[in-house]
Length: 221
Image (cartoon, rainbow, N blue to C red; front, side):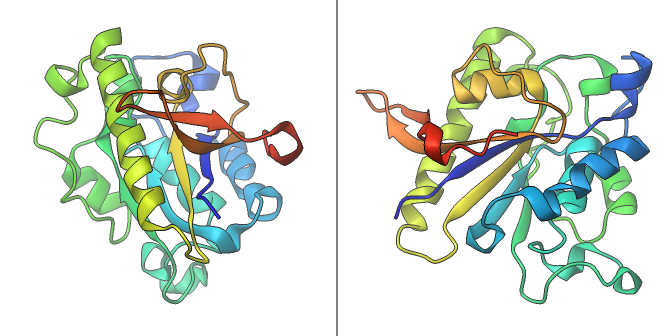
């Protein structure tokens, strides 16, 4: 059976409430933590999740950790919390999943800040300059479209590699505007900590596309 790709929008963060977009890399609100935690019971088939990819912005990392403690490896949590799973799945930071704009609220934190705040994240995969909204990570439509294409290609390769595995689904935790580019659906507007499910398809050329699952199988939330 083919992989299902679940796109998850991060939960409510401080700038969503204050509308202070000058706040650097804002964290989740208490309500945001509660929204994300609800996925522990509402998210479909956690036993099929093979990998969780997340934007390196704090609100996306926090959403991933709060939503999937029953799936993620316990190394990402304090021992005293009792959260996480022995030999659980990996949490992978992908700078291509960051939000579109160059506003401070959509600009990631430096690696030493992430290292201090979060346990055992692998920061090696973050390219030099990923926080600078230029070049590969520029905030214009062309650049954002290209990185959405890179993510889709990566998801296609992951899906192929997981074919036939019991754990074959991939969770992608990202942002509202970038999700429009990634899904190819300019009208997508999920609630905070909502998700929509896709399969991998081809566009007739060499490109990879995300195809929404059939309505009867959809887990939009």
